[in-house]
Image (cartoon, rainbow, N blue to C red; front, side):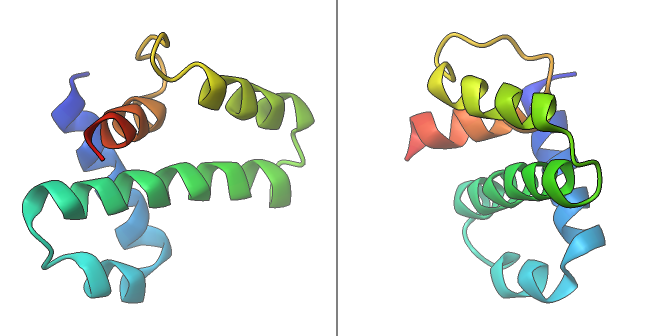
Length: 89
């Protein structure tokens, strides 16, 4: 998995879960739209952890990862794309 794949996964998530949101942002300049997709992918994963899975451990893991984005490894591609987006913007 590389960073491009992480962004592609983020795009697939937004297409699957919010077609209208995807359509609203798909025509942004490439780097900006990928950033929006990464933020959406992260929010979707956290929302799923809360709503569907009711997984408090996973939610704590996301909170911890947000505090350490600059030192995290790339085991979660969505977090990798989010870290790159935050560093970029």
